Length: 187
Image (cartoon, rainbow, N blue to C red):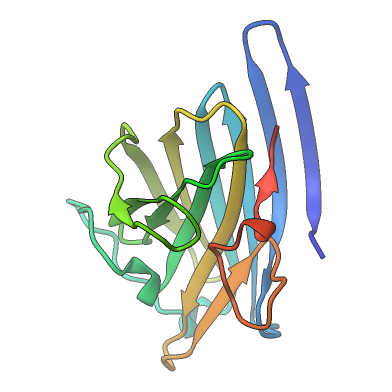
């Protein structure tokens, strides 16, 4: 079940704006953390802010880098992900951002097929803050998509080595962030 905590949709003559707050669900029950995503779309800029609350001493959080880089396999550790597709089209992109600031964007031609680095995104603006009980990771991407369908997810790696998977919804017997049935159509 999808938990939408707050939604505001406004259409203006020259601007479309969407604001949405979603509590992500762990694939396996987890009472140690909550993960919430604040999503805002203005024109074709997608701004996401993830908040992880709980005992952060148990969460592996990579140090923020002065010079973040485009890196592969970020999903193997704590990582925040946004899947972006045009409603009705098979092609989609996957944005990965680490609390370190490292990032990557891939494009797929269809479900988990044809993965290539995506250079169409004009850049990722990144921010992170942390205290003893809350980690905030935010990023913005400029997209060419006018009718977005979005998958919102996170991978949390615990210091024990356990990896937990969080998403706006899980409809299969294993976590699968690429599954379009898990995406939210924003059009």
